[in-house]
Amino acid sequence: MVFLYAVLGLLILLLAGDALVKGAVNLSLRVGIPALIVSLTIVAFGTSAPELLISTQAALMDAPGIALGNVIGSNTANVLMVLGIPALITIMHTSGHDTRKSYLQMLGATALFCLLALRETFDWISGLILLAALAVILFDQIGQALAHRRAGQLEEDLEEPEGADPSMPGWKIALFLLLGLIGLPLGADLLVDASTEIARMFNVSDEVIGLTLVAVGTSLPELATTVMAAIRRQADVALGNVIGSNMFNLLAIIGIASLIAPMPFELPELAFDLGVMVAAALLLVPFVFLKRDLTRLWGVVLSALYLGYVTLVLI
Image (cartoon, rainbow, N blue to C red; front, side, top):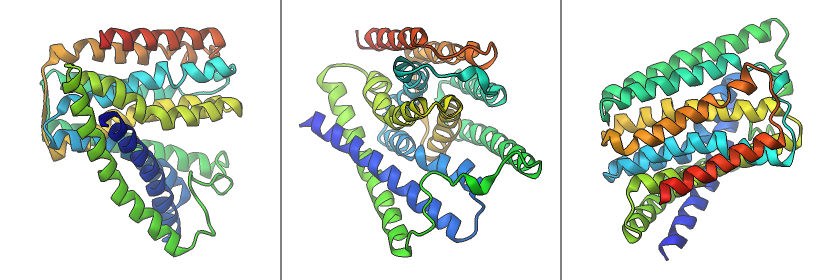
């Protein structure tokens, strides 16, 4: 039953997160917030809502291993699994797209997270630092997007934010918001409870469950988005999705969760996983700076590396 509860919790989380994004996006557009701002902020926060609720709930339940493992494991899975599996399906021509600036921002967020981890706790101090870094990056991205728009390089009206539906009635917006706000904490509570129980059953740490079961589960939306982007030959969307998700995981999710409840941990228990996360991030260098395409061979390599990592964690 405990595995059923875990799957049920994950399913509720994913559906509630999607409902919240649709409701929040259409409410924001209805009250006059520009679509560009909605895409860069509300959609980003909404799609990361499941990870945020899991990390917050785990921190409140004194299970920091699940909270931190979820983020560290998700970032590793995003590079190795979320890019690896679509590359097995079709070649992604990442060489023709410039993601250098956002990638450097992601590396900066990774370095900041690792430096703060040396304190062996993510508390309100860490939370404020991470959220301040997120604010700087968001303001920079909004400023850059507005500059492109003024230069005629960005046609905002042609690209609706994810989940936008101009014809959606008010009652439906309210229903989506209600389902999201009720479903997210319910799903997070179920998944964290079940994950903690699974850890006890198999005599493994909360960190292991966070790094594997929870991390893979919460990476499924990114995997689905990237697979569809690869099929549609939108390599920039695929790579940008992973870079943005990883940056947001480190700065926003841990930043907010740290303000709600402190998350102490033993650094030696997470040192290996932090190292793998950093190494996975650096694996993107050939695709960002050296103009290499994500071929099927790379898909095999990345997927095999992830399978090997998960095996090592579970042993």
